[in-house]
Length: 210
Image (cartoon, rainbow, N blue to C red; front, side):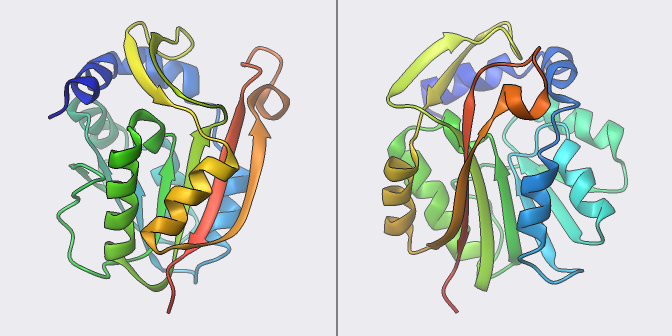
C-alpha cells in the first residue's frame, strides 16, 4: 500500500476523536438528494463509511445497504454501533464486488485522501460496480493542490488531502465515463454552526449511462 495512504489510515486509528467531531454533521440534504435519485429499496454501497453514520441514515430510509472502509478500526467501531448492517474492510480502488452490483454509491469525504491517479482508479471501479443508470454521490473539500498536515478538528495525526474545485473534479469524473447531473458547494460553518470550520465542500451527483 502507498505510504501516503498508510499514514492517513494511521490517523483514523483514533476513532474516538473522529467520531466525536463528526457525529452531528450528517449531510442530510445531500443524502436525501442522492436517495431521491434512486428507487426505494435500491441496493446502495457506502464507500468510505467510517464508523457508519451515513450508512445507518441510508438504511433508515428503506434502502438495502452495504458499507466498506479501508480503516479496520473504523469498521470495528461501525460493527459495534450498527450490528445489523454489513460492513467490510475494502479499498475503493478495488472493492472486490462483482460488476453491476449496486444501484447507488455514496462516497462522502473519502476520495479527498487520494492522489489523482487513485481517484481515477476509484471512479473507474465505481463505474464498474454500478448498474446501468446507477447513481454516484461524491464529496470533496473545495480548493487546489495537495497537502499532508494535521487537521486538528477531527484527528491528532497527519493525513493526506487532495483539494478539488468543481472544474478539476469534473474532468476526472468525465474520464471515468460517468455523467454528472448535479453539483453544489456547501459551507460547513453555514450548515452545521458557528463552532465549525469556514470550509467549503463540493458535492457531485453523477449517473452511469444506461
